[in-house]
Length: 432
View 1 (tube, rainbow, N blue to C red):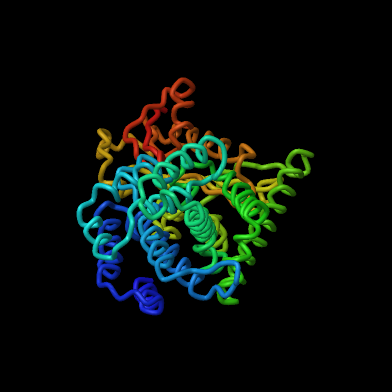
View 2: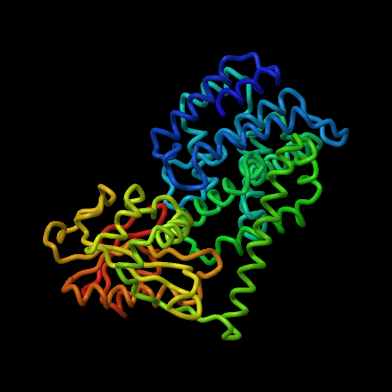
């Protein structure tokens, strides 16, 4: 992506070396702050570069008479896109715009590069503030108050309402690009991975992924109609196709989810937690069906992926499945785990029982899309605890959302062992 952006920088007519330095400086900052390609959150360096690329591409290709981009406009879009989500102290994945503004105001190297490019910091702040999402309610009110202050601080905008209006239009353009870019640059599998990353990093329950994605696209297309058309019309055909295929795919999956939930509510569908025999676990087709469900989990929750099939045949591994209607029905989920010593957990975790042989680790529950929120996961988990009790384990550890663990403190005497931010997907223990 870096090279593609550089090509657009040249095409945009940027002659100053400072723009290349800004690009490389951004990549370095994200990597050193743990927000690089290995960070499993939506707002990582990939997102930042994708927004920058689409902003320049769309602005360069846009031939609409109603939207005209000067060379200075392109420069401001470039810098604002590069840094719009850089929040190095984030406690949650969604960046705080105020933290972003504080960084770009105080970072000496960036200020030097902006001076060399002859760019007004206040205008960059305005464009970043306009990417505030959602652009409603108190969030919008706070952003607009800061924007007015920036207008007053800038010599270019102070007494120039026409230019102020133009900058706000640029900010709206960048805001829509921010929300379209990742979905225009790949197929549906990429889009679903982005949705999982967003859900994981924002500590959403899995049942919200598709529902929230559909609401997100409907809001974008219905409330930002004019700017969406402007951005999408300027992009190559295959990118427009990627975007709309993604929207339609999420809507189709949402329809399937509603159908499953309706069948469950009408008692036409029952979910049966089942302890699987070793003969079944050794069947390659059984392993294949479980692995396809396993792959739907966010990547940080896919434990021992390289030995998945092998683990099914390990007698020390506890396994139960969730089947539809009877014990021979379709498999729609599973719970799996084993001795904690067989797992390589995050280095931040210091479990006092590691090596004692008294603790079972429950891997994150795996369910097919559409079956979350129907209590099947909870039933599999309780069955797993019963199986662990029969094997004489004294403790169970696992990962769960922070609010879920808090709810279990009184019910199951659960305790936090290690808490993680920004994910809020924490490691906990219960006594069996």
